Image (tube, rainbow, N blue to C red):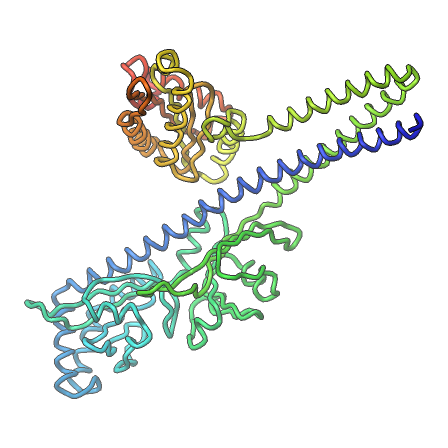
Length: 533
């Protein structure tokens, strides 16, 4: 091969290497961004699920309270007797009792409609679930819903209180139902049901988290339903999905213009470009109450603006590209200048380029985020997560705590049992951390036997509870070796992040002070940092 062809081939190879490095660094940055966004999406999904559980407890509390009222039970029992005596619910005596029961509940009904978006209080007679009184529609009675309302049917069948999401003829929301017994006896009179809508609660959740929430149902699931309430409720999109409730109007616009990505019933995350902005959009299945696990009847949609973070990623990619091009040009000019010194010098230059490439490969390897022994995050990545958490404190008004952990007398294990046993102890400890900590918590190996843990959403008291659980689990564990069993104890220092914390070293310093106090106090204990000397 001629010198000119050799130079050309080398130039092309070098260009390809620098281009690959620039692309790889950009891809690593994008993966890190997507990983951060996935963790945030999991936290936002948990927030909705917690809200749903709280609403179920709320409606059960309402129904329990009303069902325990002696006057309400008495009127309901009298109404049931009147319906049986008159041969139906349309008689004069049944109407009088129904009116009295409505009057008894009217003040609570109006107040709870205003305060918690209560949409329904409904009395069903035993045994077939015949409607006796709907507070939202007092003129409608005598029909039975148990044939297509499994929640009411199950309570009528076994007398056990239940709650869950259901789709009814007037609204879709969280319903709870409890049995109502006759006063002074154990005779089942019927079932009392209460239901709340999603709209107001989604708005409050959205204001707390800073993201949008919405509930969509499949067209098949609600083809016979009629929805009232806010104008956004009951909006049917071109693809057949029905918008029941939303905290922000964007979701209705996306539905109308068919901009939502296709949804097949699983957990899905996508980026949506809209009106010059970029949104991360997450959907997860919504199931109604059923004795059997039925297919989802819709989905919960969560979205938030990530335009600034995507723009920062694009700017980083551009900087890496320009730096890679500049590095290539410098290397190329140097290579062309060294050709004149002969093949020996050329070979030497190739060797230098090879070593430079190996150095860059080593640098890329250092971008990896995981500690190879324990599988937890390494020191560099943990510090990045700590900086991100400090930046979130003001924007999200979120509590967060940090723990510093150190295995007591770990050097004795290495010296007495060997480093192989010491590695097993570190790996076993990392496994304990995964069992105790949540998926949203961040654990990193700071060095040797020293670890640190970020607890997003946890105040100092909650963090101390987690620290004690972990400390107890570690202290009770033993590892069997050729020289007998070996155990280890754990000392922890705990502090809560403050909005004035701008430097990770400041937070780590407080936790380190508490850890030092735990060590000085005899080890195997958790100490919370105290500003008072």
